[in-house]
Image (cartoon, rainbow, N blue to C red; front, side):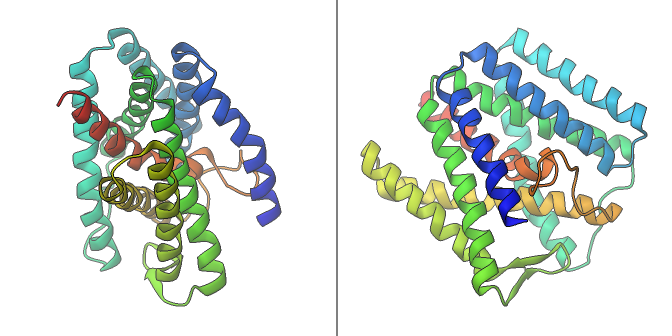
Length: 267
């Protein structure tokens, strides 16, 4: 499993770096849309849509993305970013309540479909907005925070994990893994401070918030999978599961990251 994860990561990282730094905004928008469409298909599978229905669901997500891309209005970005950030803030409470077995996700497929559209389209919009702002360094910083937190949690959890973090949501996660992920992300934040000469307190605060939301995204997808008793959202990425498994943290963290960037630009 670890060997497959490393091989897949080594294949994907150059593609991601080219997409961030070398592709223009149109190619970037298209590539991100492709990823979101694949994730939408997996979301449809998680909420138990039929095979025809989840193809239609993915197509609707693509249509919404195209409409947002064509319109490209600042108020659209703001509505999407604020709405998704509000949900992900509430999702922290959802995860806690689910862990305490005090709530379940709604059974309505329509509710879960609309929620998926909001979260997936907002994730695309967040990344597209950052690219439009010519913030390649910000995009890379966001990706490095997600990757380092994920990798740090994985290895720290494997080496030291003893105390369960959220056993009713994701039994494999431990507090030791969470601490390892946070430390790894803070190291990335420190490097960013040194290279970009940014305020260390602001960067560390922003790093911690980003990691908290990335963990929330991971745990929320775990709840979706537990509700339908599925281990992975798909099998398109060897060693990593599905596309949704790989970007669940990014889906939650990117709107927070982009909204902060939007607010700073307009100050």
